[in-house]
Amino acid sequence: MCGRIALYSEPRRIARMMEAGIIDGEFEGWRPSWNLGPTRRILGVSSSAEGERTLSSYRWGLVPGWAKDPAAIKSTFNARAETLATKPMFRNAFKQSRILVPVDAFYEWKAGTPRQPHAFQRADGEPIVFAGLRARWRGPDDAVLRTATIITTEAGPDMEGIHNRQPVVLERESWDHWLDPEATDRDELESMLHPPAGGTLQHHPVIRDVGNVRNDGAYLLEPIG
Image 1 (cartoon, rainbow, N blue to C red):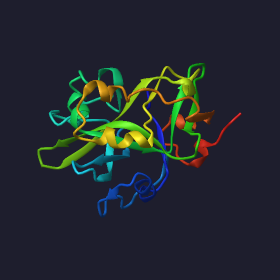
Image 2: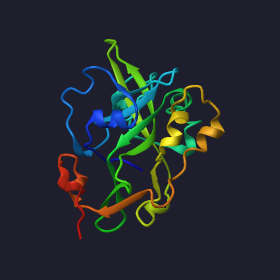
Image 3: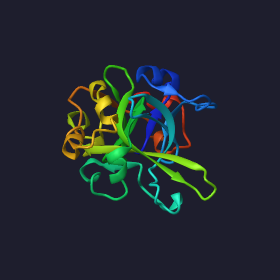
Image 4: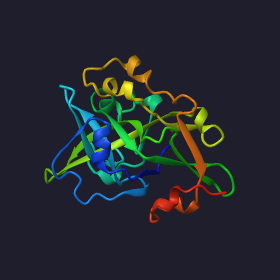
């Protein structure tokens, strides 16, 4: 699973890296964070039919358009790759609302007493780009809530000994196809949802303060021990 991320790169830097546009005023008041949890605002890149990418903010935790009350939708911050095409919560988004979710790092806990958090980052120093899905929920006052989820799969070699699942990491050469609204072949899309090659990510143990979302700051990413 993936339930905690660090996002401290400025949105404009992310937009340049991912060749995406930004809507005026979208990120006014944006603040970096080293400890974002579900229901907080994360970033996502979508694509138009013409291939134009846009970087937007999303509430972390997908709420499908048919939901009556967003508060009643629980634990949708992750979506299992194995059931995207069949689970009603995610199947429509999988067909037509795929996004890229950039983060600077994510945290996972190694089993033990107590559990030990580890921070994962790309070995090349670039932001990590996850496979994600988005949805729009319209309230009774016509206010629109943009929401997103991060797709997870079985753990790869970089996660060995820490957890049995991890987010799907997409490399640059696969971004266009994942975002393409014309790409609808289920088998082809599902074949993209695998763990990254060994050596893509590196990790180190970090302070247990990251377990509480009220704690924030760059110190959370510093290696310990």
